[in-house]
Length: 444
Image (cartoon, rainbow, N blue to C red; front, side, top):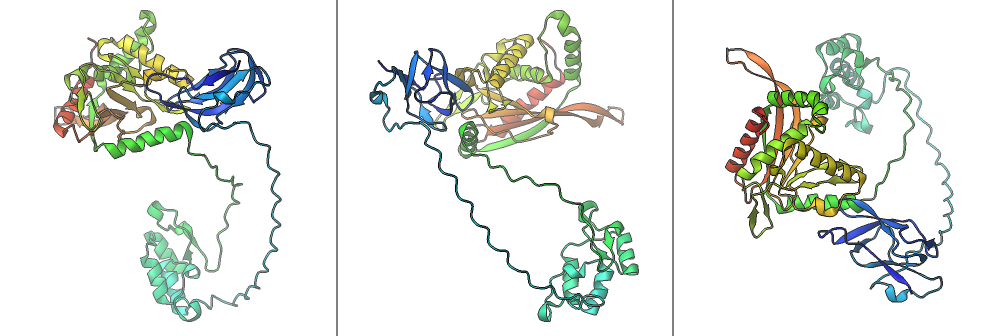
């Protein structure tokens, strides 16, 4: 008796999965537990095992198809059995079609003979009027490259002046050299495209270019699968929420000092590797329950505020951005929070995380500080109403209290809110509280 293979329900929140690749073909013999295909949700990838030993009778869905969970995608049974009764509505065989015959390459068209070039004039360029040539030399403009408006395309002094006024700028030395020697401008390599004296070339000369490196053809990447699902959610977030970003900074002196202490003593105390990101997440987790307006969801009809901090952290993986959630993060000590964050990030990067662990967050943190980003605009993680971006730490000059200045390590913070339901004042107060928590960091 044939056995159906269903698209598994990967967590309570997943409604459909993408078939990335079939690892077997129709007619193949499989054992129970063998991997039949790989699938992706919008957050992670998995393999679907065979529910029984036998022969692959039919593949009902093809690679690249988005399939609802609990839908039959294949059938396993005894060779020769009829599995048509297990086919889902609208199902078709996913067996690969015979490869099409290669297209006959088109015969290249015969090259069109180029018209013979007109002989170069004995001296100068007859297309450029003498007055225009003199003005071009003075202004440092390549008259030969100026489009002419005179009879038969002749370049006039007015054309040269227009070319100069269109944005060509020479350094004082370049202008002096051009006027004294009659040299014209090549491409400007100075600041803002300004032409330097070294960019000038003699009239009629052509600057040699280095041989171009072998160019590779452009790469086309289909917009589908997990990338499309992530992109669609980002677009929906921007369309559904009135997103506003506030930027602030915090004194990171205490944060860096604690990080150094924990790094030195951690191995002796049996602590996990605690990062600067863990320290900031700890501050946010302790601060968030005091600001329920930002620890909330908005579904377009009602706002749901939470007393628990279910902290979500954006994790960059080869499959795209994933956002696992540490539930009740405010109840964990620093070591517990750091361990939970590290474990979830590891599961995300391995593609083995349970989709249920990617749901239920009440507030999200995303960190681009390690990449040197000083401020940015995080996009809300729907239905949440706030997301905090952690930026880089940079030394900034601050008053030392004695009329002078001193350098202070400063952490950038970028908070995006849904301005439909969160006003600027509570958002600013939350951001200030986080900055103060960073500046006066200490373990509870």
